[in-house]
Length: 358
Image (cartoon, rainbow, N blue to C red; front, side, top):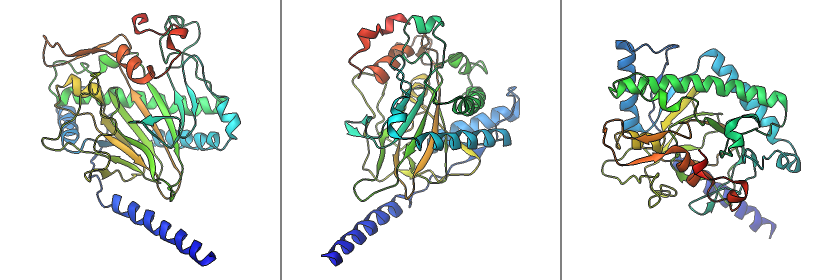
């Protein structure tokens, strides 16, 4: 019996190691761009923006090279996050905000397309004082973050400020690449936006499951991700004639789409680089010229840490086509976030959370 048990264990290990190797056979061929410290709209900026747009159209994602200060800030943020997730479960569970739903989420609590995802998460919303009018008006996701320590707050906020600056400059470059009338056409949409982040820890792959996060698109505007060297992120590039749902519509969802299909590309971790891709709002803004990028995470052979930063519009922003002045397809961003991100909660009315508030 002991021999049989060892053989079964060995067979299981071989099976999921083979599966992991198969997934790694398709590697995303991503370009890495160097973002200027200031975007002025000259010929160099325009050409860079056009190349970035083309990369999104063909690959669904590009990379941005980190400057030394961003690299250092990223490493400090990931290191601080590792220390947090090492804390006892009972302690981690105490860092949850009943006001904003910021803070800790245990592995298995979140679902994609009805199936549990397996990652621990620390969610950072728009961190505002209780005196801020948006908090007093009960805007979802606006309010104090339950930081576990001042050092963790400092490490994460320093990094997110740098990502915010990068996000603004990327939006300016994309505006140039799309030949929009104003260099700030997209950046203005994200002024004082609902910028937030999720710190994620994925456990190693096991014989029971390789699932990290199921396939989905992100409901917002711009996503910037830093990851460690473990790997596990996969993207689905634009594919000719493939249907891509308009995830902002109540009747359409991208959750779980093409989960088990072949055409998923592994995003190989690149030292000193951030991965950048568009969310649902870009698909709406550009009438589908830029598609929201489907992505998923498979657990790797060791635990994986990543930080996903979301550079977002203001809750009061109306999102519609940048090409059509008479566009009838639009969303109120705060309402969309409310319905997509928070409507699964059964206590929203008790909290006074209604999108009419914003």
